[in-house]
Image (cartoon, rainbow, N blue to C red; front, side, top):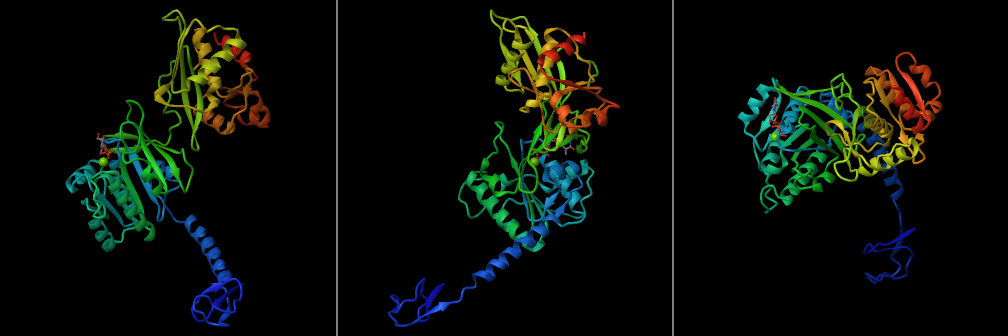
Length: 448
Ligand code: TYD
Ligand code: MG
């Protein structure tokens, strides 16, 4: 209960005889609190918000883009699109802006390129952009004047580095300018339920220029990556308030812009049908997607008096551990060998379920045995040489089956735990349960 002085408004938890602020006597009365009502209002507001947010996703008609966003652009959300110069950020932005403009009013602010440059890109991309609004300006204050007039539902800023704000005295492209411009834009857009996409360059070392300061201002962070010397582009989600992180979208840069690659589980493995000793296929997960990866090992005579180990795409400590396990349980000695282990196409893998494939590829190279190209290996290997169970086994096998693999080597425990796995897949792919490294060694030996 709270008491309030009717003269000066001073509040007190006890009913005082004299107010020590205005010195009036017998002036305290019980204050009727409306806290309860407010609370109710708050709760009901929150619930209705949640209900409406779920239905407010806008698809840009590019499946790979919608996936990394968690289903599409959420109304009033802000997205940061980062990537090295020349990777294709402006191309992607223009393509999705054109798609979105058929049903929404979209403003594309180009602070780096002139309207005629954008025009020629649009021609090259064969984009119909009659409904798209362009603005070629670098002043954030001018941009605000335009938004007030146009009231777009989606705004794309290409790029945030090129904007200047009157409120910041720092030089163009400085962290302070970046922060001020981004903050102003994201606050305005959130208040007015405008979808905001900020394009941002990344420096060669991988950090965003004007670094992590922008990431916390937005709801979703996407990075555009290039697979080594390939026309493939991978869009990765590293933060998403409305969906899963680690999702990927796959595109190909072509003569006429970015084309989405929906069938992408085999993009990281070599396309030739021939196999060589030392090659083994496995799978890992990128967000909700099962992706095939190719491990290659080369076990050779040492170039010095002692053997050395190299690893590309896998943690060297993990590779060393697996070599030690192999030495102990298969009785093969690697200490006088040079060992190179590589994941194809520059992929980096941390998922321990590729352990079995690493061991298979080491055994294959050491014994000069070629593993058939329609064989795959999944399973984590423990220090006792045992093959441990892994997550999402059924989803992985489904993908192997779909991609035409005929034999899948997997943990014995996974096969037994997952009930009728064998019955489900027996038609097209043979499942071979492996208990330990010794068993795998035997199977590889039989492939000779
Ligand atoms: P761009 O979208 O301008 O990159 P960013 O905005 O990230 O700097 O893409 C530039 C590169 O993409 C450039 O090297 C040319 C190439 N490109 C194509 O190969 N095909 C195309 O249709 C377009 C528009 C660009
Ligand atoms: Mg650009």
